[in-house]
Image (tube, rainbow, N blue to C red; front, side):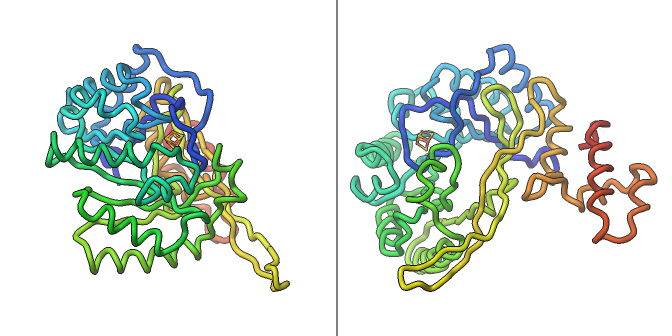
Amino acid sequence: MSIQDLSIGWVITCRCNNKCGSCYAKSDVAEMSESEENIVIDKIHEAGIKYVTICGGEPLLEPDRAIRIIEKLKKKPEVRITVSTNGINLVEYANKILPLVDKISLPLDGFDGESNRINGRNKNDFDVVDNIFEFLHESEPKFNIDVTTVMTAKNADIKHFKQMADYLSDKRIGKWTVFQFIPQERGLVNEEEFYLGEDSFKKIEDNLREYVENKYDMKIDFLSMWDRSCANFLIQPNGDATSQKEARQRKRYELEDGTKRSEIKFFRFEKSFGNVINDDLEILANRFLALDYDGNVRRHAIRKKLSYGEQVSNIKEEKNANEEFKNIYEKMWRDGLY
Ligand code: SF4
């Protein structure tokens, strides 16, 4: 993967006009100035990055900022822009935003008002998204819409997801992506209620994939917490470059009948690897690509740099190599190679 293939998520604000129970957006992060935005945009252009998602929080809570950034990014037409929005302000700013962007991504956890509330979304959220489907189909019949759904312990029921598939089947969406719940930020507060193990997620994935593929011409994708590790290079509102990571721990519990069980539990955390305003974007991209699932440097990424000094050739036994890799990595990081 090269830097040009990176897909960057630019969190332009962490603030939101909603309070979803499974939300993992950070709170209280300072927002960059317009001149700092320009630095970031220039770096994205110079690096030749083609995929940028403008997200939040709720990016359209800052419509002027969102439009300004998108307009400037689009000065290079090869940059593909997705806006990930809860939709509340979309219709109001549609005239300005839709001609500039390639795709809109909308959240939906149910097939009607009641079922959509199950993960702590607001009672009007279903109508907001439903109205946007109608609005976009009338005004922009070929517009590309993606839908994202969070699967939690509350809605992890195949009947619920089949009903969602039936509902979405005539909405002409580009792709439906189902995410495993992430216990982070507000989601962490609601972890007891929402936490869903990998096995339960996979079981519904297999069943639902078959249902959708046999019945509808609709793309569906599933991203477990683990899949999402290293998936996103995020620019935070203050310019910090971050990626979300997981660590694993075995959790033991007892069922009501006294049977003892255990399962691997994932913990989500954020790894910061520099700041886009201050640091070279290519160096940040290399750091991002070199991070493994636990936020450590990937061994293969170091091996690719075999020309970097004698140290690498001193590593004979992989099983004893952790410390050496770590030291080399630190040196390469200091020297700007990662
Ligand atoms: S999940 Fe999205 S819409 Fe909901 S509170 Fe978080 S940022 Fe806002």
